[in-house]
Image (cartoon, rainbow, N blue to C red; front, side, top):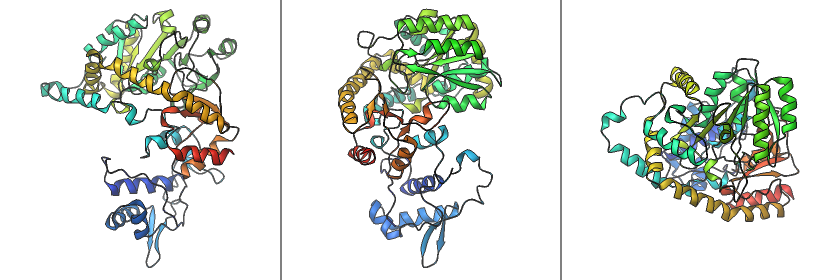
Amino acid sequence: MQTPTFYISRDSGDSLVEQIVAAVANRIDDKLLRTGARMPSIRQFADEQHVSRFTVVEAYDRLVAKGYLESRRGAGFFVRERASMLSNAPVATQAVTGSQQMDVVWLVRNMFRQLPPQKMPGSGVLPHDWLDGELVANGLRAISRLNQNLLLHYGTPQGFLPLRQQLQLKLAELEIAAAPEQIVMTTGVTQALDLVAREFTRPGDTIFVDDPAWFLMFGSFAILGAKVIGIPRLHDGPDVAKLAELAAIHKPKLYIINSVMHNPTSTSLSAAKAFQVLKTAELHDFIVVEDDIYCDMHPGSAVQSATRIAALDQLNRVIYLGGFSKTLAANLRVGFIATSAELAIRLSDRKMLSTLTTTEIGERVVYKILSEGHYRKHVDRIRVKLDGVRDDITKRLEHIGIKVDYRTPAGMFLWTETGVDTNKLTEKALEQGYLLAPGSLFSPHQAPSTKMRINIAAMSDAGVWDFLKKELR
């Protein structure tokens, strides 16, 4: 058989053997290599992947030991039947009617594949060469020169105080008043959302989200036993009439919203919509959780009108979330919650009960970058690069028949209409070594969809365009 498409990097921290083992195992788990399929010969694999035969032999031996392959004397290596070994695996991870299950876990798992960023237009992060690794490395080097005792203890419950003081200044620029004691550092916005949801909801309670919205919330809220209901997202914010109607019926505890640079549409909230959302929250007594993770990609209201609900409410009914994983490094995992001083203490206590404190090393790195003025120039460069490709990517997509729903002047995402089932399109793409983000994953219902999110920073690979042209013609 032809060797499957693998991405093997000499610059990775993992050995070539480890990369091959992980790549083959992932394809078997995702049913892209079927039970009984014959693997390429050791010579063929080595020649096509430009590695030594000894590397392939060791990788195949490890895959045999892990139960993924079986060696048949004189015949080669074959994909092993794993049904009996995996009989206790969750149903959601099994194949459905001959096709792999498309769900939130599927996309998250595949986001961590060892694929080059330009082969992942479905990714939610910027490619490495769009970021500034040296900026982060310099911060780490500076931290390493500190008194070692500072790096050996737990962090403080609410997070590194100088960083919270710096965030006070950052929020003031957004017209949000938050003293350091109102800010709680978290392990990214993901943990921030989890802490807030656990604080305010109990099994059976309702949480509102945008529809479409960031998919990871759906699974995490469902685990808590919450009922997740989507509010249709329009070009300037949610459908406020639908929000009021559903709030009267379901009495939600929380409404999670991207006010600025909404994921996946890159739209932003108008002042009128922000005011109406806040009034509806007051009328029906629910908390608005404003996820502003893409805050620094916004170019300002002169380019795209945008209103933050927290600026209207000043953290009374609104809980504001932010972080730096999208603009600095996903691996730093530095996020924060801004809220009332009383709630900040409760959330900090809840954080300690679940994970103790957050990692102060990462918080010190972010503080150094922010306080020395490097961050502002860095995000300016990111916005310029995004502006430089957005129109071209939009035109090329429309030329091959993919309609862009909202032609926004900012952001890293395009929300598109393909005219085909993007679950099936995504399966075919993965077989070719590309990761797409099907529209079904961005709705709480996760029904098949013709929508697809495109990361415009990850569309430089000619093979992605060739694949889309072929499949959509």
